Image (cartoon, rainbow, N blue to C red; front, side, top):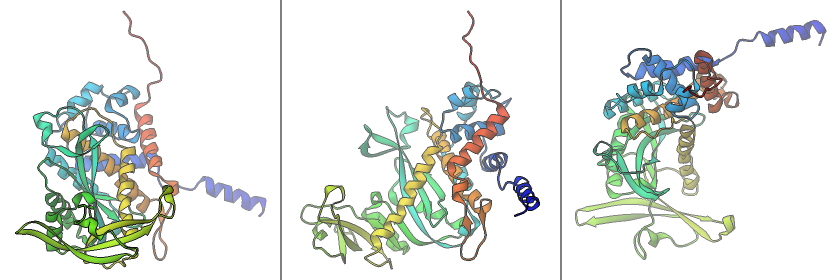
Length: 391
């Protein structure tokens, strides 16, 4: 390579246009929030400023209180809390969150037949709930010293390179599993998405859910809870080969359901110092997956656990027990993940034959959050010193 050609190469590299900047990333996030959410504001704390403060807190996994201390030219924490406390219509906010989630998904996911997962995300609740909070408290098996949780059921797409949440349901105390599933599946209608296969958590294993999904004729796969001592599901945990059978749960004379039961045998092979056969039992309906592959197929559902880990990176911290405000913070965290995936698809990728080439390592979720943080630090400036009050 000649000196002149080398010079041209360096100049072309230095003048190359960036595919995405921190300012553009911030614009995408704030634009989505303004487009889908409405919070009544007044004075210096206008709606855009409020959303930018929320975006900064989310990008750092921080609280509103600490965000107000770190940034210079923002309203006080009391002023911010005053406006956020106006958010109290849970149903209206839930609808806004779901519109926002669906507004930022890759175009290739719309109008398709896709694999879908439904799961519950639990956030610990401590203390005695007020009458307003009680409706949104979910009781479950004890974890970290509590039986009480804020619960959020999510509808999630299982497909390569596109981990997005399509809908969220803030679980009410009186919600049945059937009601939760029905609500979330209804959110698919506006996207014209059909369910190719539905993956459910074992927490949905009960007679009404199985009967309802059979009536809807939706192909589904769900782990069975291994009940019974001699009878029940445990009677099928035998042998060294995987097999299929049917089973009927009878709660009373007129309340029963019969379903396909697949029993998968796996050998531990000394993992975690354990040996012998390990049994995995699945309730299935119209599943065409090979019996030998169903274990690996169901493990794809764990992508939803990845979405929860990503969501937790950018969830605003709070001690506020207002159910609507907590739903907003959880909704924003899921939304940021959707926006990240959408930006990867639209901006940090290249068309090619077969499938789109996505440069995920160039633009991780943490990189997007860093973009949001530094763009807002540049706008509002960061506190550089503190002083002890006089007197």
